[in-house]
Image 1 (cartoon, rainbow, N blue to C red):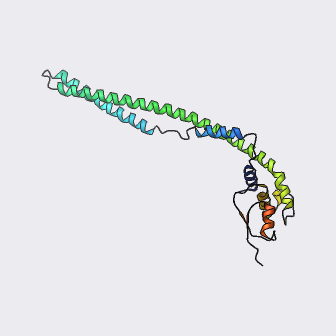
Image 2: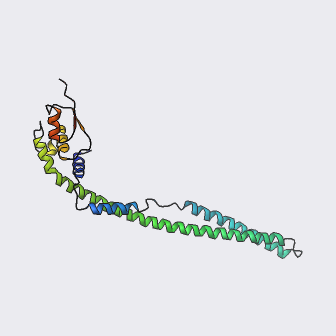
Length: 210
């Protein structure tokens, strides 16, 4: 976690608000409602192709039987022809249903593409709002953290960005709101009570060696 991230977390722990907090909540809600994926049309296309092939075979079979009926005055192929007509009708129904399913899949895909464009737009706006919030949070808390750095035991600077790691950590703990005790394992404080008074939070102190 960068020092800027630490400042943001400290500001949020204090309940610092920004000018874009309401926008951030709205954008997150809108983004959660937008589908994240585009449905596949592969299965629908395959089904259309399969039913089209079956339909063509049935039509050829009916045409063949019709020709045989015309050549056979005895009517020996009537039953086969009627059965072929029935199966052709079923094939036409299946093919029509497959084409309708593909059309529906295309409509869904188009809606998904539109939703993806909206998602990208919302993500862009959300990113901008987050950057604005970070700038405002850091600006709100940075002076207090700089003051804490200047006052930290053992610190030689008054700037959080240039402070040593221990002084920077102490400053953030002192300014922010910590939910649990922290561990101090350095010689910056003579005892636990002094550390707790300065850091303003419960402390487990591990005396430095030597």
